[in-house]
Length: 310
Ligand code: GDP
Ligand code: MG
Image (cartoon, rainbow, N blue to C red; front, side, top):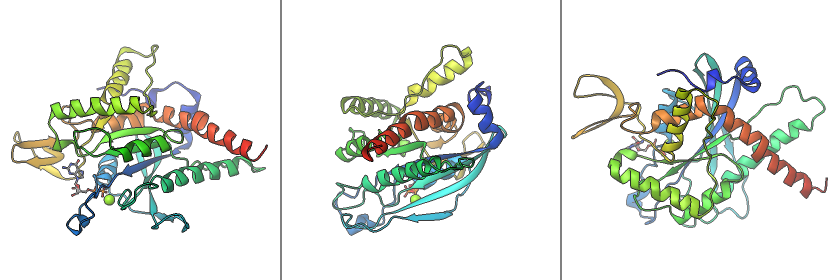
């Protein structure tokens, strides 16, 4: 398979970022449902976000700085949002990736405002950027804006839950939303196909804007095929694992072992992990950054300035 996109994009912005290295912030949102609020559920783990982060970068990321949100009177419980950074290299390009993790999110009796800390986090990053832009010396602007939000959907096989809809609607004007079906290995191919369709219908019905992978007509055939392939996989059905397992035919792969066989993380026949990774750090990284800057941030900025009567 040839390399497409990222490293070959012929635009200025891209070349500049290749030279300097750059920052890219993805936000991982995991909905942790505990509808029964029962202690037997207390130990239940989430939907696999830590696993996916590690799978994505084939590494173990350690928390570097913990951003603890200021206590707020209208927030019933302190929610800590952690950001984890790692330098990775893709096609010889150095890239700092920060993942914003939201532990225990959604895990409240009252989930009504659970989107708030996340939206506040995104906005505070916009504010930090705006503040730097307004400085006299604008030489070294650090871009810590969130460029993508991977939204984990529980693999229920039904449709989106009200809290998913609420959450995505609160987020979609602030961040590039990329919906993900978590733990896709718990569903059959057919169930996944049906679930994807339902999720997309719900998203359309509720007028939720998710990141749309653009396709460019002037690309070569291979690039175009890759773009169409990525677009067709959304919402990505994801299996995460850092465990090496043996396949029946004797290969060692990252995957999950079941009595009936092995699900391979890096096998496109088995799940959409490869496509998701490709989208995030190769094919559409520029688009994600560009859309954040020219559209999402710009909208926030004008609204803010209007609000200040500027
Ligand atoms: P987090 O709380 O969202 O960060 O979830 P973790 O990454 O800690 O994963 C919670 C549990 O789910 C762990 O036991 C993982 O091994 C398991 N897990 C993570 N990803 C997957 C997956 O894609 N499929 C399955 N079946 N289990 C997963
Ligand atoms: Mg975790």
